[in-house]
Amino acid sequence: MMGSFGRQIMAVLARDLLLEWRTKDALTAMLVFALLVLVTFDFALDLRPEIMSAVGPGVLWVAVVFASTIGLGRTFAVERDSGTLDGLLLAPLDRSALFLAKLAGNLIVMAIMEIVTLVAFAVLFNVPVDPAPVLLIALLGAIGIAAVGTLFSAVASHTRAREVMLPVLLFPVIVPVLIGGVQATGVALGNPVARDMPWLSLLAAFDAVYVAAGAIMFEYVLEE
Amino acid sequence: MIASAGRNASLSAKLGWATLAITVVALLMAIFYAPTDRVQGIAQRIYYFHVPMAIVAYLSFFVVLVASVMYLWTRDMKWDRRARASVELGVVFTTLVLITGSIWGKPIWNTWWTWDARLTSTLVLWFIYVAYIMLRSYTPDVERGARFGAVLGIIGFIDVPIVHFSVTWWRTLHPGPVVLQASPAAPPQTTETFLVAMLAAVLFYIWLMRVRTGLEEARDENRELEQELALRGGLYA
Amino acid sequence: MPEIANPLENAGYLIAAGLITLVTLAGYVTAVIRRLAETRARNDELRRQAQAIGIKERR
Image (cartoon, rainbow over all chains, first blue to last red; front, side, top):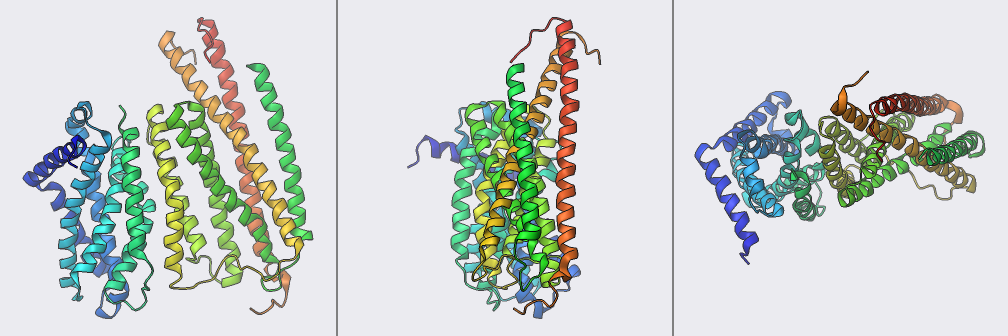
């Protein structure tokens, strides 16, 4: 199972995680931003307990998506600026393996950010949260966001206005993740209005389609 | 090459006149021939151009998908030109669909916008392809722009059905007004008018695609010529 | 749903939607055709320059 393809992924992933562990740049930035968004929402919407069940899931997911954009934007920007991207591309790396490695790296950091954000959300707004289902939903959503985001991050990093391009490209495409994630979280938190549609299947299908699409399309983005 | 340009031009011209003729017929039918809706009154006639434009918009983006795949496969710039042209047409049509949809909604539901499944999906579609146009304009390198465009053309279109489902499921929670009510028995005049309008819209798209793609072709040629001239010995512009 | 009392009551909306569509499409078509003519004119000019310095026509 761990063929050369798997080994390539692990090699790049280990390197990225090690780099991230040393500086914790991306994780810190994402965490601080997510918490900031939560707090900003309180000022903006005056999140009293009675509206939390209706509005809560949305607040949580907006914080996660905005914070993810920060982290995803860094995926290739840093590599390009420091010149290490050329090194990666010259190595006989399968492009799909590179994509999956970057995806996994982003996913791990996003997952940590999501856990901490969920805890903060539960504490700040006094929302009783059953962690297991909500974290599952958050993870499924993160896979989709990371898949599209990793691909688009590579695209955006080659353009003139990269901070603007990534959100502009990303947000419309991940609308299904946002809708599915918010509704599923609503169901998990006992929101009476959120109805049981097969949201998890939707998220899983989105993930499958976009991880595959990203892996296939990645080589076309990185041809240099 | 000049001869083929001549033939192309005359085909485009014939197509253009045919389009104009059928559009006039469709317009007259929509105003006079089609029956007046009992519930919505005369405003319902917006349907005869709102819906065909919506269908043609999706057609445009499907063409972008095909052109994107073909470009990545053949690396022939003619496919990228078609993608560029079709994206712009698609965004123009989608914008009109959103505007006419909004205007149609006002007398019916007394609101300028409603988050019903179709309008919302169309809005997301609009954003995806506006992002395409922005991406192309922010990618100065020609070959890279074509490649990135192709990737987005594919990724974006794959999303269309997924967005549609997610928005439709989301909207079953708050059943709002439905843009297209299936009337129990639409009289034949309605269907006939719609079909003529549909034909006009498709012809219009085909004709405009030819013209717009021609513009991209001319632009690309200019760019190449300018590069050659700059290389070989200065531009006397 | 109740039948509308005066069917012509919403004519304004139909006219607005129709006019916006017509004006937008006509304007767009005109802009494209005009731009095409300009670009082709520039094209001819560039070709002449290219021939003047002896660049062979590429296809």
